[in-house]
Length: 127
Image 1 (spheres, rainbow, N blue to C red):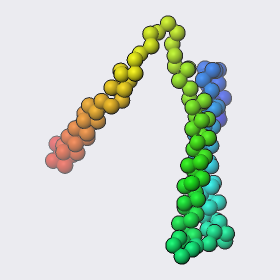
Image 2: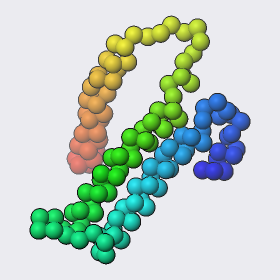
Image 3: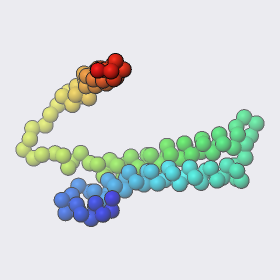
């Protein structure tokens, strides 16, 4: 990915490709390593109680830490994936209703489900 960034750096100028790359990779890295840390702590540092095992406490602390981290990562992602880079000068602004209808229109799901069901039906019947 770093090689890809090096090759496309000029074409992606102004689109913050490194910030977009880091916003995704840092989330994966933080969640992976902190789960590793909490798994290591559950055997030596975190002790169970009458109602919670050390595994439950470690998993809960891991989930809580991820939730808190996501506040900061979401702010970083809002900056990295800004909507401003998609504004085209001179184009009229669309109302909220067109994109909203496009996002709640379930026809795409119905077509895709029908396509997959017919594929499996043909496969099962040997056609």
